Image (cartoon, rainbow over all chains, first blue to last red; front, top):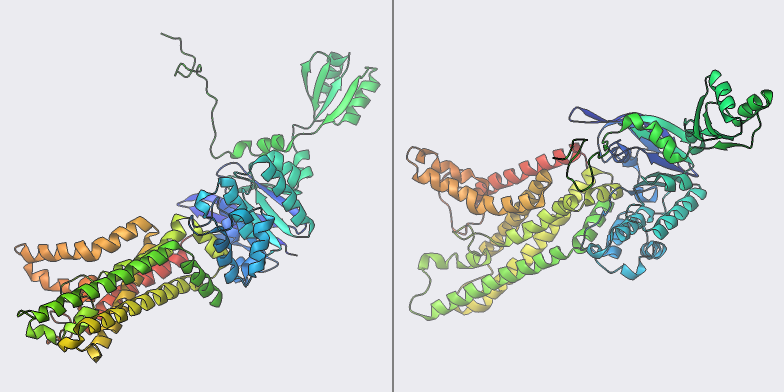
Length: 318
Length: 270
């Protein structure tokens, strides 16, 4: 099974750096989530990996660049577009065309159509397909050659909740068979359930790479919740040690920068009764938002006007 | 290379436009030959037959749909649309990335597209012109018009070559522009309007008429010369161009566009 090795990937569009010296690995047997804000360079990176865009660096699949693979669909399956097919070429014909060029049997075409739940529409033109159906056909094309590596750009786009759950199960199952799966998605809750490893980028630069648990651990949103009748006294003691303490409600503290054991020790040493002491682990979303805060390419701003007035700001009505 | 050829072969056959353009081309070409041959046959029956100077070249002119002798050759326009769609669909529907993930060799993908489109166009043109010759033979055999001459065979070959070059030029243009609609408009306007308008301006504008003879080197004007059924006296690149000179100019134009298309396809992001 193949390791994907991306080394020094870079891309500049008209003087603007889109991808800057990205280096990461995707290991077999794992789903690697590829995360980044809009415009971070995820799609560009995937295209660079497949030799579709020209840029700096190199990517190898089991030591070989994509462009030197013979019958590439048998090695690497890719989904890069929302609807990567001609609207009037029948779904089955689309897959037959790809299969024909990669010496994949026509039985396999029918097999993936069945696996992807597309048998009923195999002879239909994709122009009538919903976005979700289109994604399924794109996924069918990616899986056609039974590849050891999958590169999927936002495969969950347009899928309904059942479809998303089905895709998660499928990708985990494929990774479980020892395949390498690199998947980008904006659905962080979904990624938290699906991915084992993460590559996080912002403004084309690497922010983090490694196991998802390690990434979440680095978040400052990890805290210790303490419920105590002596909350005020305990907060003062902890602050003296340089720990960040916030009181969310009377008798309840949130402590950042000290683990639960140490907080318990401080309370014990000072005879402060504790009613609750628990770790609160940051969600992937919190860790991601924190990590990419400074790397937002396109940032929305809060609307400050009164709804329906058509005004913004705090000006007085006339 | 075989993989790329197989892909293109499947691609061209599984798209509806290929079939309706092929049917239109054959129907239009053969209908034209049928009607013209019938009309000429009727004129032989009247006192006023075709002029004597035309009788010798009548058979190749009918087979070539009178192109090169004043009439535009419409058959290649239908054929060239197949070439325009071959690249146009890649960019219009985002197919190019699917294509290049199935066939990562850009050289093979590019060559296969031109070869398969060329093969299809050459076959359709050959069939249409051969049927045109048979229809002419059917109507005019009794009037002494011979369709089994070298001139007729030569016209079939020349018109097929013209159709091929016309299609490859349009195909290359689409790949350069990566814009199907723009390529279609340009493919129609350039030969049918742009070159003619410039020629007209140069001929009527005082002071510019010295430049008018140069218009024979306009690619589509030169291409038309390939299809002339009449003997041309004068120098090779004289005015008018000889059919071979027309072939060199038009072929050179197509080759130039193809070279630009190949270079840009290698260089650009998909």
